[in-house]
Length: 116
Image 1 (cartoon, rainbow, N blue to C red):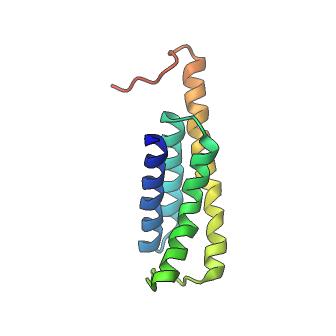
Image 2: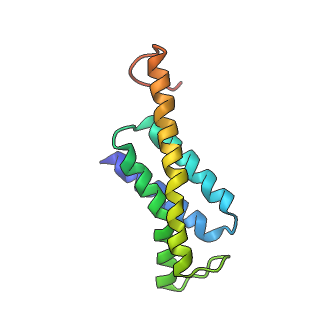
C-alpha cells in the first residue's frame, strides 16, 4: 500500500504543478521523471502507476473547474478531455524505468537495486 500512496501523492503534486504553470513542458517532464522513478523503484503494477499519474492532470483540471480555480491557461471541458493525453508521457516514463530496471538485472547486478 505505501507504493500506491506514493504514486497518488506524486500524481497530486503533478496535477498541482499543471494548474500553476502555463508551460506544458514542465508537466510532461514531471510525468516522465516521476513515472521513470516509480517504474525503476517499484515495478509491480506499472500499468496502474502509469494510469494514476496520467489521470492526475485531467483530475486536477476537473477539480479546478469544480472549485472555480483559474489556472494560467483557458480551462474548460475540452481542456480536460485533452488532459487525458498526459497518460502518454506517464506510461513512457513508467515503462522506461521498468526497462532500465530490467537491463540492470540482466547485466547481472543482482535482483534488487542498491542505491548508495
